[in-house]
Length: 104
Image (cartoon, rainbow, N blue to C red; front, side, top):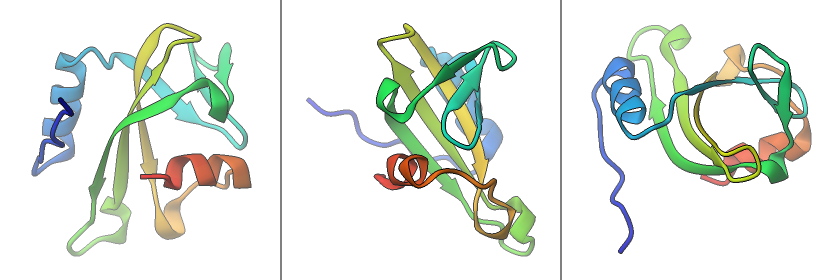
């Protein structure tokens, strides 16, 4: 049975729910990979799977636009959270990373 995508009104509610589901590692987006452990460890796109995607659109401020990813990696045995702006505030990333994050 597949899990249904929950719906949340705020970024805070979403992060609280993901943390309660075990997504406790903070991930950072770099050009060609994701980083964690303060940048000490990196994951290539093939090293992780996107379990959840939540998109928030700022009603009046484009700076409020954000995507939250719930990410798992069996290679690194982690469940983590990636927060990423999109649109004009998005960080530059490689074409391979764009494809990976755009699947959802």
